[in-house]
Image (cartoon, rainbow, N blue to C red; front, side, top):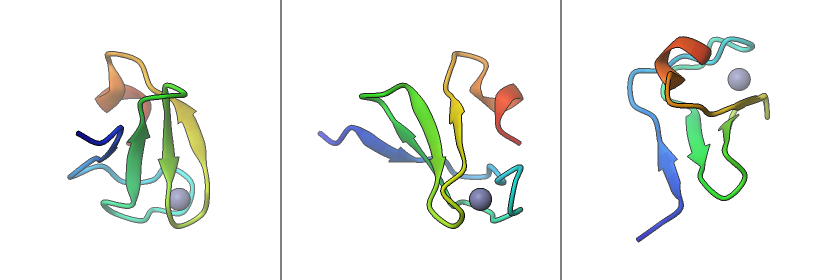
Length: 50
Ligand SMILES: [Zn+2]
């Protein structure tokens, strides 16, 4: 089991990279692997990161 999950179908709000976002379950953050942008990951994750 891994704590990092790539988020399919989500686009980075900062650099517009598609499928570059992954969920860091340890820190409760979503991070973009392209530009390093992070956002808080809450249940409404699809609303926060688009
Ligand atoms: Zn990005």
